[in-house]
Amino acid sequence: MATYILISRLTDEGCATLTKNPDRIKEVNKDVEAMGGKVVGQYVVLGQYDFINIVEAPNNETIARISVQLASRGTVRIMTLPAIDVDTFIESLK
Image 1 (cartoon, helix red, strand yellow):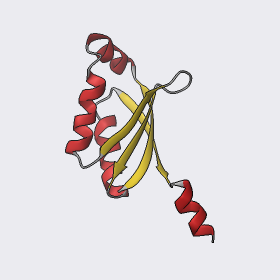
Image 2 (cartoon, helix red, strand yellow; image 1 turned 90 degrees about the vertical axis):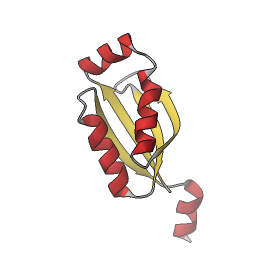
Image 3 (cartoon, helix red, strand yellow; image 1 turned 30 degrees about the vertical axis):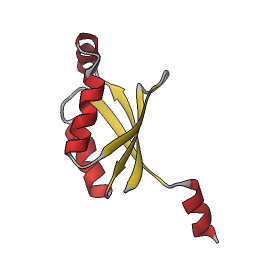
Image 4 (cartoon, one colour; image 1 turned 135 degrees about the horizontal axis):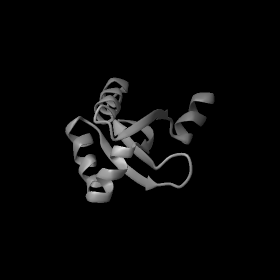
C-alpha cells in the first residue's frame, strides 16, 4: 500500500458538525476504510490547517476517490500528497 498525507481544513459546516458530534472525526475513518484506504495516523493541528491524516491506499486512483468523496460532503477541503518512505527514497538514489 502507498502512503499519502491528507492535509485538511474544515468548512463552516464542518466546524458545526464537529461541535454537535465530535466523534464524527473517527466515524470518517470508517468511511475511508470502506472506500479502500486505511487511516494510520491522525492529528489535529493549529494554524492554517485543522487536521493531518496519514492514510494508506493501494494506488493514486483510490486516494483520489477518497479525497473527492470526503470533500464532496462540503465539510472539509483536502490537499492530498503522496509520501515516500525515507529509506525507500535513499535506496532509489543509489
